[in-house]
Image 1 (cartoon, rainbow, N blue to C red):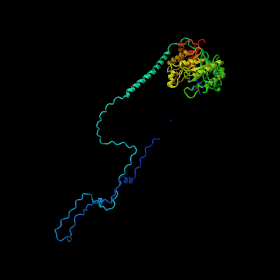
Image 2 (cartoon, rainbow, N blue to C red):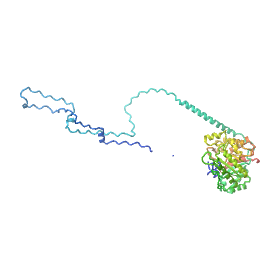
Image 3 (tube, one colour):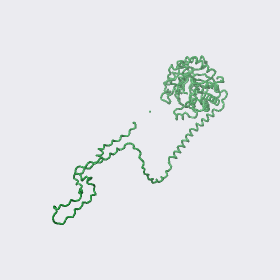
Length: 491
């Protein structure tokens, strides 16, 4: 139970009852130069040096020689032979030879075609050649690789993990099997109400929301049952231990109305808060000033007409010595006032030291050791086990778990202390509690089986129903039929 749940008894889930450069773009390509830039930079036209001798020109071919002029020839001598013909010209046509031109500067060469700018971005995929590529020579077969030395190691690690998992699951499977077996058999005759049962009530009974008519209806439901104590939510405590009177401003009206309609039924102030044991915020029992303030708050609720104080402080770790010291002081206070001191208690280790294992693995040691449970039980008048939110997935396992818890608690609770086992009068589906498994019939049967096997004749024993505002007619019927139908004589 979130024991301090509260506006209608409790705040859901709160034991206190309080109520997540652009990708840089590709650089732009540098612009290519102009045509003139490329012509001058890429293909310069060399100028002819003035100190270089000119290339010899071939004699121009002007056709056949003209007829000799007789007047210009000497009168004597042999006639001259024909003039030699020039060698055939194999060079370029004089018209195309630049050397045949006048000595002016040659015309500039035409600019070459412009070069494309360099490609700085991703280009198209290369087009495969249409020519068939010759097959490469086959590569020699690689030498076989030796087996990786890590594979055997991985197999060893997996085997080790499997063995560890089996070691963890084996005790769990064994325990679950034992719980199912624990749910078998028949309860002993007479293992029913001892008229020491209790009911947790929501905050609406003391904050002005309920009326006399509601009290009469409550009385009608509770008559002929074994319920003797009502734990009415009157907190929560502040984290410093104080309690504002406005939290229970209708306490006098309610206690008077209950005494009128249900004589013999006691009304206790249900006080609680979340402890700072697993979170930074919460009530700190290690502070003496906090414990002193809790004592003052207890005096105040007794002055308001309550006949006892019922404490539910969570999460309370097994072995907490400050809690035991607080209980010692509270017992002295309540007994001096003729009032009752009762507490809501955590479940007992289903396996030895299970709270230590669970606390190490989850940070939340849900259970108490059996020895610590006994230390608490010896300091109070009533101890009510919150025997729900057990994580059991079926009625058979849940009932067997309740039977086990009943036996474990009976073994260490003094005969002079009332031991009450909690019944789940609420219906939620979440981790830790499944409504189809944690039912009132399964819990009642488990309580009776545990009582039968451990101390069937115990007088100071009962059940505690959690909680009035969430209960259904089926819950009340299961309680009556399974536990309160044939009440024995009260001891």
